[in-house]
Length: 347
Image 1 (cartoon, helix red, strand yellow):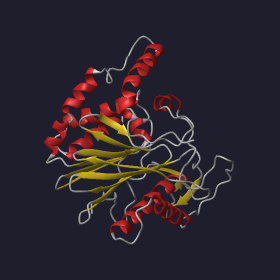
Image 2 (cartoon, rainbow, N blue to C red):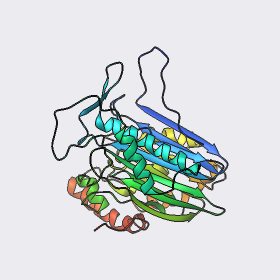
Image 3 (cartoon, rainbow, N blue to C red):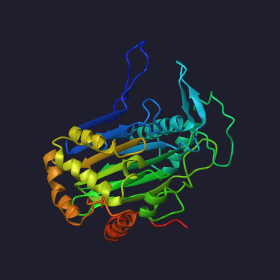
């Protein structure tokens, strides 16, 4: 099983950690990587991304978790050295633990492989989470240990990859395919359904995982022939782009510059940190490529197509109206392919 190591500090020393963490691993025709960054070192509300793979059964899980800092800003836990963390910080990490435990049960054939069972695991672990610190903050928007989650469960077959995207909130999962590029596999839990409008407005979420109110996990599934790339990301990766196509440009441009999965992770981290205004985390797996050179080469033609289409060429002058017109024009041409595999609009 492949699971990213947790940052650690030496015994009897104060906990300190960098504001970022990248990780990669390769097994047979599987290449995985994760990227995690914090805006405030030690207080980032994204949990470390999860990438797990069970070799005997060909089952895998990608997942990211973004603590909802607005509704979960109240203090929720104090460490032994006196540091206080918010409910959003705790909620994201508790949800990660629950997802990892659920996946372990799935591969051990002890737990049903269903979103409903994952929901039960999340509720049980959230109910047992520490809540020592108290706050006087109240109101209809307040949540206890709130977090988003975007996860992709996948299983390798003889020729294909069966996948199921499971999510709550506005973190997203995607497929990146050599012939057609980036496809969204999830739809944000907001009242605004247009992805470009979501970038412009950052609308409030209508559903998040939390400990004190009902929540639900949406699910969407399908199958790809190999090779393919699956990934999950928090909004720190895609929410500060000018258009949805720019996120694909970021993925493909850094892929083309890398020589290994580890280099790709490092380039993604260095590319996103200067432009994002939030914590950012991403978990990715490439399936069915003989090696990294084949993975990189498989997307070379797609990257050339993205560049020729002008998706990378953000106007830098002439005012906001020019930028808005460029966004509308490029989104109109990019949208059909991007939304091709997206689940339908909820009533």
